[in-house]
Each structure stands twice: as C-alpha cells, then as structure tokens.
Length: 344
Image (cartoon, rainbow, N blue to C red; front, side, top):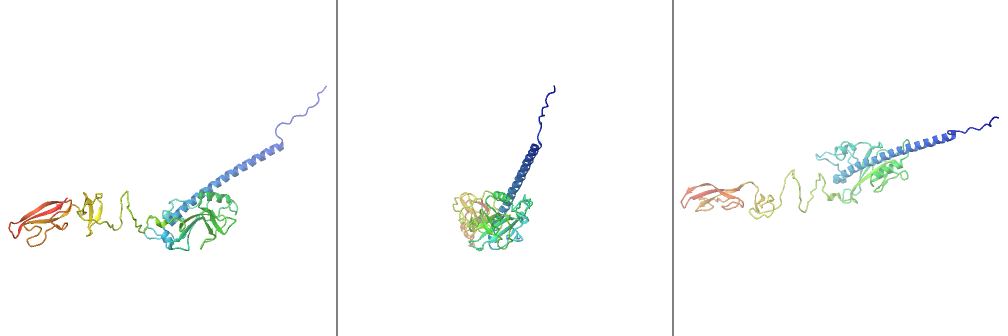
C-alpha cells in the first residue's frame, strides 16, 4: 500500500521579500550618504563663516586705525606715508595681508570655494561729529545648492550662525535688501554693484551710533592725547624727536620726590632730584669760584669771582668745594686768592 504524497515546505526568501529588503537597504544607504554629505557641507559652511569673521575683524581694524582719514575721504597711509590700498573704500585681501590686518598666509577662498570682497561706505555726515563708516565683507559669489542656481538657505544660515550676530545675506524673498540681525542696507550699496540672492555678508561699523573711537588712543595715532593725569610706563620710553619737561623747580631747594625725577629751572636748565635737593643734571661739576683775602668774592681789579651756578662764593647744594689753586700777595691792594672747584 503506497503512502499519500505530502507537499514540500518552502524554504528561504521569496522574491518579493528579497526585493523589499534590498530596497530598504538601498534607501538606508542613500539616506546615510545624504546625511554624511549634509554634515560635510554644514561643516564647510560654518568654516566659511569663521573665515569671513576673520576678514570682518580685519575690516574693523582698518576702520579703527584709520577712521579719521577715511572720514575725510583721504587714503589710509602706512608709517612711511604710502597709501595702504589702491581703493581706500575697497581694500583687497592682499593689501590687508601686506598691512598686517590679516596673517600673511591667510587663504584667499573660503571652505565653500567663494572669495571675499570688501566695501566701506561713508555716511552723509562725514566728515563731522555724526560721521559713521560701515564696512561690509561679502562673498564674491552666492551660496547655491550643489548643481543648481538656487540659493542654499541651509548653508547661508550656517554661515550667518558662525558669524556670531554680524552676518546677513541677500535673501530670495527680499532681493532689494542686504540685511542681518545687526544691519539692513539697500541692495545695491551706494556706488556698488547689486548682489544676487544667496550672497552672504558680514558687517563692521564705526562712528556715530558706535563706541566713540576718537576717545581712545590708537597705534600710530597722530593726535595729541593731552592726558590730564599721571602716566606710568612699565618699560623703556623711546622719543623720536624732542622731550620737553614742563615741571619747574629751583636749584638747591628741597625736592621731596623720587631721586632721578626731572624738572627745569627758570633759566631752562635741566634739574634732577638728588638727595632731596634739586641739582643740575649736568654731571658732577658744580661750578667754580675763588675767594680773596681781604676782598672776598672779587678780584683786586673789581671783577666778581663768584660761582656762576650760585652767584656767590659757594657750591650748589650737594656739591663740595675742593681747593685747586692758591696764591697772591699779602697786601691790601692784591690780597691772597684761593680757587675752588665744586664736585660731588
């Protein structure tokens, strides 16, 4: 007797299930790849924002160091009197590097590949107390989605975030404005080309509405700060021309200040405080005189022999008299004369 036939059980995956699994795997791989690409692009955008920030700081340095010249419409100049920029209102990157506002090896392009342009705008009140200068650092090309002509809003936002509140852009919804959290300018700027949507920019300002830069002494400042109090310097002081000492004192008088403190006499002689007395700063020589017996501080011819430093037969305070000569005749007409030199 034969046994009845039993159907075989199917083992393994069905074609439909296998296709579904492969599709899900491919989708996951594509999603992960897109996420990785997005992270790379975000990192490049943030890096570009930091790059622009360094150029903004250079622009702020230019406005701070050369505000007066720029406000007057004059060209900023270096210590040798040569212009720093070919166009004083549009410094170039290589000029900023040459002037020391950027490191010598600072890159010309951002991580996203765009270059930077700089523009300084003088306010209508310049020159004057209400003058203000606005500096803009903007991308030479817009930030676009890869392979398209559409602005990359995510990339623009990442750049602006890295700029720390000083960033802005020309947004697709408002192409006539270049705006950010700290500024809002017409597009185009006065005298400049229009920027296309997707252009990012950073702002730096000086003058009215900003901290008064004129209140502060700057490096290579040509103004007289007219300080009204004491000035302490921890190291050496080098003076390029003349040094004028305005304090007045009288030689021989009590000084009561630190030894080495300088002043001038009524005759313009330089005095220093030594051993609590004002003395001439001409070294160890304190003048000379001669004393005659019986004529005193006079030669028998009637000419005074007093010390020019004191106006008498004496030494200035802090000096001692040393005999250097003696002679004459013990007569009432000529007398005996002793010569002295004052030293210390």
